[in-house]
Amino acid sequence: MVVVAAGLWGRPACASTNCTQKFTLIARTKGANPTFWIGEDLGGECHQSHLLQVSMVSGKAVLVRSDLELQKDWKWLATAMKRFRTEQPIELFKTEARWRAKGVKWFVTAPAGNGKLMSAFRRHIEAGGDGGTSWNRKMGKKGILLPVVKGIDAEMVYAYDRGLYVDYELTKVYYFAKSGYLLAFTGQKQLAVGGDTMHGFILMRRTK
Image (cartoon, rainbow, N blue to C red; front, top):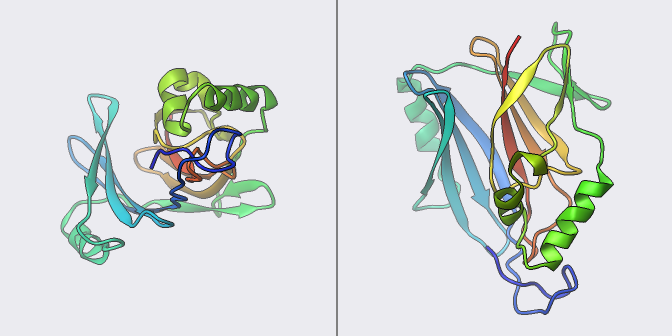
């Protein structure tokens, strides 16, 4: 997905891929290493689908990415999930700028914009970075603005490495009440080098 695109970021033009991402939450399975199963479909000039499995192993999140043979071929997996012990999430819905669930007092919002951090990201690109992947590798947690959770305390346990978590919007939010996990999918208007999207998701866990 990483090539230099014409006209993007003021860098020399070679080619563009214009890959677009779409995420789908498939399930959260229970067990010794509870796992979030997420489908990532790439459109544009990329015709691929990946199964992303984020597992909690000894308190830490581990990602396994697998390629599907056919793009967007998820029905078989949704059927297979019926044979696993799963935790059903509560989906939060957006009212004005707040994401909340019926009967729940706490809510989630996207973080405020941060011009200083976005300027640092642009300098990173001008210096040869490719997008969210290289930015996250360089900055770690310092380059991530977390969703704002009001009414409960939660900490980040994982952020998908291809996303840019600065000046983003929330597109889907799920809460797993029994285990206390909060899964937020993000939408990023800024494009990476190559014209690729930098959407992503952040997994948090309620601490109290």
